[in-house]
Length: 230
Picture 1 (tube, rainbow, N blue to C red):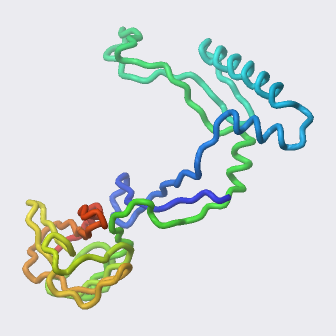
Picture 2: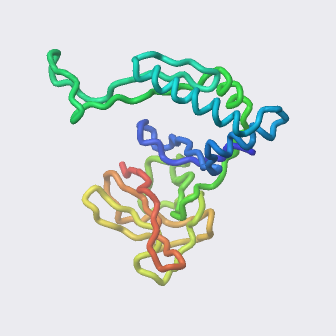
Picture 3: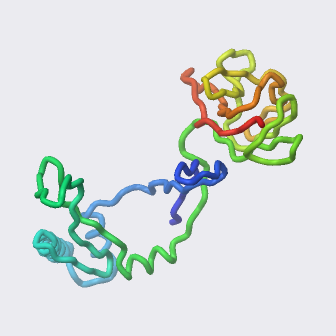
């Protein structure tokens, strides 16, 4: 099995083209599932024995952490930490404002297995339109400055919309919230569109939004794609 992921906008960097990965859950397993697989791995130890030993080990580890100790194991390294803000140097621990937590980092065995894992890039699991690139044909530059009246090419997925619906389509939204809908479209398919940027756009920052409608008639839209007219 691979570790599946898709990319979304990275809000922590100033570059609008930056993306960060979101891992798609491959499901979950309980402690009972772990014990079952361990018992079926060829060992002579029974599930009852494995369950008993793990139960004791977990309690010992929890006790050590509650005593302020750091516990290192092949799987994870765990240490106690305290979260919350202390107003002054003289402030004491207050359960209303502070919390004792456990911080975990990967141990050597886990690092070894993760290093061998196979990543697999997939399409985003949500159903909203997604723009991978916005190309201004006049300047030949992607994801930035746009030219009113010029042509644009966008690539991504889930671009299909009903052209007869007033609330679906391609929209430029300025800083005041005023929307300008794209009216001249040369090509519009699920993964690519070519259209004329409205010539009425003035200097300033814009969010480019695609609105489509689901089978349940719910409007779906992408997160605003930042662009600028200079």
